[in-house]
Amino acid sequence: MDKIRIEGISVNALIGTLPHERVRRQNLIVDIEVGLDLKAAADTDDLFKSVDYSEIERKTLQIISDSYFYLLESLAGAIGKMLLSYDPVQYGKVSIFKAAGSAAGKGVRIEMEFVK
Image (tube, rainbow, N blue to C red; front, side, top):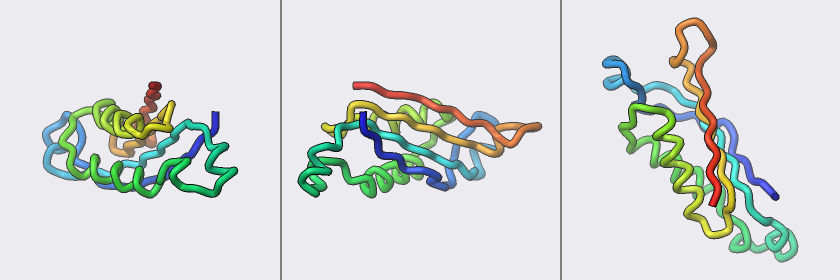
């Protein structure tokens, strides 16, 4: 399956279960992957045979800025649902890195996969 990846989307979000996380935004790094057949787009040079990845990025940023999720998993689920709303997309993967998610490590990363 062909893939489009959007990597390293840096955005501040209100996310977390601890009281201080509910009042101060934290930086998240989001990576998105969508699986779809890109042959028709390659053959015709027609965007409508693919997906507009700039639109996916804008929608991702909107979901994050509007969200009040407690869990990274819930946020990834909302993004995954949006990815699968595009007709040609058969597969989506969302990875979210939260540096403030670990006291002793570099951070916490969750990855979720979504299939039609």
